[in-house]
Image 1 (cartoon, rainbow, N blue to C red):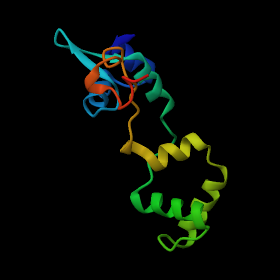
Image 2: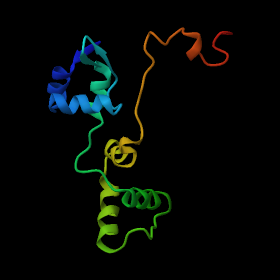
Image 3: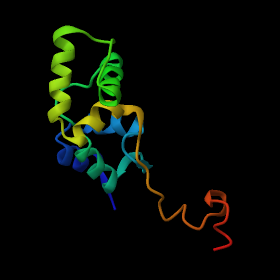
Image 4: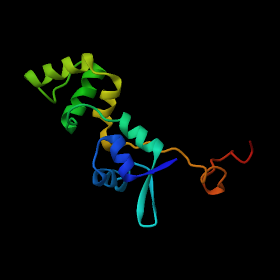
Length: 129
């Protein structure tokens, strides 16, 4: 199911222009119809669930968090910044951690009916099943 950008904007609590930018950047599955943009409802739902609180961590904080989670130590940050990060890592929900660490680095796509059964998109061995 699809919706126009104004409906998606209302669902996400964003402006229509912000939704258009998200679509252009690949954060929302979309297509153009008659000069307008429609976005996939599942994509809007995924975007609504993918937001975390606060601003995103910078690269050094992400790397430090990964080191702390893996080994319990890091030299990337020191003092009170490391202490605050340790405290945050003790209580952070998994969804917020994913938001901070993965950020805009990944997108989630699901095959649409147009791709299912298309030989160009089939995996090896699919024809044998």
